[in-house]
Structures are given as C-alpha cells and as structure tokens.
Image (cartoon, rainbow, N blue to C red; front, side, top):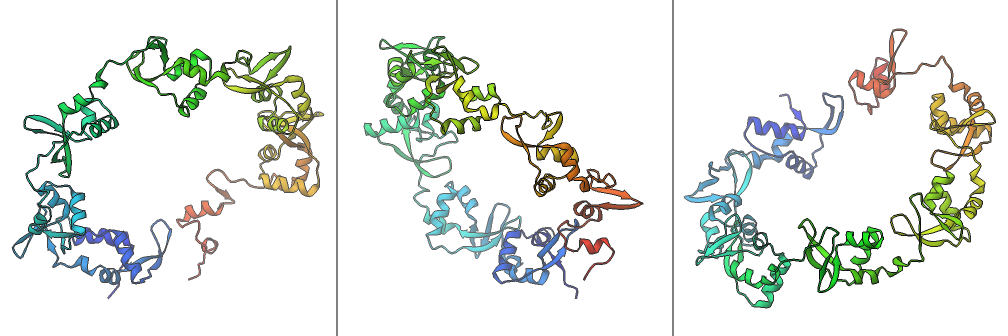
Amino acid sequence: MIERYGTASAWAQWFEKHEGVSISHVTILSRLSIVRVVGVSAKNAKGHIHKNGLFAESDVRSVCADLLNPSLVRGFENGYANIDGVRHANVLFLARFLGVSASCLSSRLASSGIIPVAGRLKGGHINDLYPEPAVRKLCSDLLAPLPKADKTGFASIGGIRHGSIRSLPACSGFSNQSINSRIKSSGLKPVQGKNGSGRPCDLWPEPAIRKLCSDLLEPLPEADKAGFVSVGGVRHGPREALARLLGVCKSTIFSRLASSIIVPIPGLDSQGRPVNLYSEPAVRDLCADLLDTNLVQAGENGFAEVDGVSHGTVKAFSRLLFVSVEAIQFRVQTSAFVPVRGKDKMGKICKLYPEPAMRELCGDILGKPICGADGFAEINKIRHGTVFSLSLELGISAPAVKSHIQFSGLKPVRGKDRSGNVCDLYPEPAVRDLCDDLIDPSLIRAPDAGVVDIAGVLHGHIKALANLIGVSNTDHRIPHLLIGHCPS
C-alpha cells in the first residue's frame, strides 16, 4: 500500500474537508513532536524545500486518534448533547443559556473538580462538555434572581435607575475617579446585581450619584478669544496661551508644569472644549529665569547681536558656514568657549556663540572644497569625488573601488559633502586608471531582470536563474541543475 505524505497544514485541511473534523495544524505538529516523529524533506510547487516537513498519514492518524475517533459525542446545533439522559454543553453555551459570565464560569469549573466529557460540536471542533445540573449547582449564587443590567449597564430597581461604576461616568459626564472618591467618603451602599455579561457587580442609584457629584455640575469658567479667564481675581489660561503670552517655547512650559506642584482648575476654552487653566502669576514664577529681559533672543536666522558682535546658535552656524552640526559641536566641546545665554526664535533657552571665534574654531574646514549634488567637486580643474560617487560613476561596487585605492596608496584631498561633513575626495582620472580592469567595456551588464542573452544562450545571476527554472535560490544543487545533471 502506498503511504501518503503531507504537511501538517495539508492534513488539517484534509480532515476538515473529508472527515468533518477540525484539528489545527499546530495541534498536529505538537503531537508529532511529543512522540519524536521526524518528517521527510521534499520540494513544494514553488521549488521551496520543506525540510523534515512532510509526515506520513499513518503517523498523523496515530497521534490524533482520540480526536479522529468517530464515537466521540456530537453536540446538537444548539450546543447541547444528551449523555445518559443528562444535558451536556461547553462553557460558552452554558454561560449563554444560564446568563452568567463565560470567564467567571470557566474559573469556577477549573477549581470545581467536575470532570468534563470530550465531545465534538457541529463544526467538528473538539470541546469539553459539562453536565448542566452540576453547573447549575456550582453557580447557584449567580443564578439567584438578582437585577441584571442591560447592554448600557443600567437596571431599574424599585423604579430607580441603577448603574455599574463603569456605566455611570458615560451618562453623568463625571470621571470614574470623581465618582469613586465621593462614594468612598459618603458611605453610600450599592445593590447587588449582575452586569450585561452575567457577572456579579455593584449597582449604584443614579440620582444619589448625581447628588454626590453636584459640585461638579457648577458652570466652568470659559476663556475669552485670547485664551484667558479671570478666576477669583487671578488671570488663568491654558498652557498654549501662556506660552504665547510669555514668549516661551511650548515644550518648555509643558515640561515645567508637568514636574511642578501647580494645580490647574478645570475650565473651557473659547470653543467650549474642556481644558486645564493655570494661574498666570504662578507660571511666571515658575519660568522666571526664562523671562529675564536681559536675555537676548535670536531672530529667524538664528543670530542676534551682542555688544556689537554677531552671535548665533550651532545650527545657525552650520547653515552659514556649511559645516555639519556634529563637527561644530565637537569643536565647541573641546574648546574653552564661553557662550552667551539667550533664547532662540521660539523662546527656548539656548547657547549663542560669537561669529568671529566660531570662524576661527572651524578654520581648518571652512576652505575645504564642497561636493555638488552628484558627489563631485572640481579641484585644480580635476574632478574629484567620494568613493560612493565614484562607484556610481564607474559602475563598480564601492568596496571594489575602495580596495583598489587602498592598495595603490592614492592620497585623498579633504573636502566636504553636501551636509557639511568632512570627507575624502579622490581624482576621477586616477581612480579610472586604478580600476581599469573592472571598467572593461567588453564586460556584459545584465538588465534589471538579471538575465541576458549571450550568443543565443540565457545567462544570469543565481537568484534570477532560480526564478527562471522554478527552484529555490538557496538550493545548493543549483550549479548542478544548470549544467544538466543533479546529484541524487
């Protein structure tokens, strides 16, 4: 008899389609690995190798015999099975029928000692079936006639609307924390009930909750168009408006308020949206160092005049001198520069450096030739380029160009790339001579597809040829396949 082989996924699909049994491929693989069954290797339709990935039908049926057993109890369409005159069902159907939470029922069954019966539902899935009478006894407290909330989380008890602690904030507009804190200090007692899923919960009378939170129902102060409002004779405003008023960076205001002990008051902005309002005097004290009128503020270009000398930020000098930010920062950190404390155009505290001293500090790289968009610069009427730009120009890999240059001892000229970073530039004519063996015009270049016709015979690199003949490009037999013979 010929033995059939297939992957775990293929067997799972076969059992479901032809035998009406749903077994996941993960279950099949885990059971095969437990008994140390090793599959055979083979190639799929796309040429990819399945290493030890195909399993014999006899092995699969042996490890899954209990799941394929035709004598397993089958559940009816409603999820129940009659076993010795007693109705059995799985957890989900029992929870739905009894009106209790499935998670609550599962946790109770796990510690109850009730032994389930293995059965198969209509779709073929194997499930644990529990006897309904034993489950009713186990959940007798949950099946008591307690008021049950509807989908919105509310129930009518004695003509009074009650809700769970989760549903009350949605209808009352109060936060969960506000309601909880007031309940704890009031001594209000809840009514025992069940939520929409059947899980036991506390239900609280909505009128009593609204009375407890009546202080929150007072009208909130509303800011004017400028974003400010007077509360108790003190001007208050949101963080954004205070940042604009004080001329301080928003992120600085945000971070300082987050780490301060200033307590905001709830209010509304000019559009009627809820917002936190902060006391202007308190914020001024918090940002007193930033409000120093003696601090000079840089303009849009990042520069400001201090004692008749132009000062600027590191980023501003990077744009002006065409030197990378990293190069300037390194020189500043290793120098004895004493910057002037000031503010950038956004009002953020920054360091300003004098332009003459900065030019002197970066003098060694200011006169360097600068590469254009193509990565080349003209030096003494000779075109120079970086290793990368030369590799693109010559059609040779960058590592090959670099190795030829290093072997020859060719000296570079120091220059700058488009970002202002110092780089090595090499003369193009000299590099062409060094790489002459790689620039052979007779060499054939393959198109993007990777395959080219040479004298009527297709040639290509490994990946392109693998796709062409329908095998995996990682197959170690490709060289043998290409010359017409393959080792067994």
